[in-house]
Length: 321
Image 1: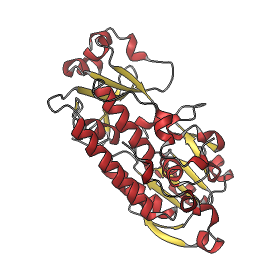
Image 2 (image 1 turned 90 degrees about the vertical axis):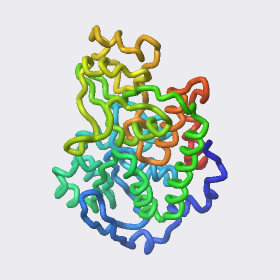
Image 3 (image 1 turned 120 degrees about the vertical axis):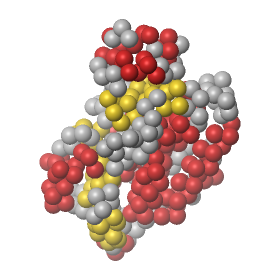
């Protein structure tokens, strides 16, 4: 399990707030997922985040909420895995449609954005502030993204420690998981034709590492992280556990008569999951997803998870309200 001993003393983590202006003004080169190298400020004082990744990393490092403006996944919801601290941040719109005017009004000195939602307006973002675009989708990218952002926030060693800690925790959970059980699973957005995630997706990779068998399988074309999957196709593979991103009360897939034929539905193993299952690449989200996934796959082996309690073990107490 996550150990509080991994946390740095608060005095070290809060160094972000005490850096002299000369440190905050120092620039370092960072290469993002466009392959573009951008000069960005060390310990930026105002960060516009299109997706939760930068906020996730920042809170784990002890960066105060007031330093962020952020998009949301579902309007009006402040994610439990971030302890609801996004309520203290300026909102920039839904992550798929960030509002450039609001980004500009936030006066950031750094923008950290999801590549696929912002690259079409890259020039506009770059006119506001140094702009970094990351994929924020795949497991193998998570560690690099956490390291890069920790370096930007002036705590590179802490970033490496967070990455190493997760790898240890994952190995511990894998060692405790039943060895001969490989429950079929799918992670998806709900809809008349659900969108399901390939195994390279960060959340799907974690579930697969625990022994789950992803019915969608690995990426095979166009390097897309997921694919549309009809309920007819889903029934052929018949998942035993279904994870659905909880985006609100509308659940059209449940109106299809095929839905009730799925084994996961028959056996009560459909789980509507929170924002951390879509925005999994940060250190807080991936730790929470690991624990939730272990319980949902093997409820007789791993205990149920209180998301806020797990997040509170990682986010420094000084930031918690």
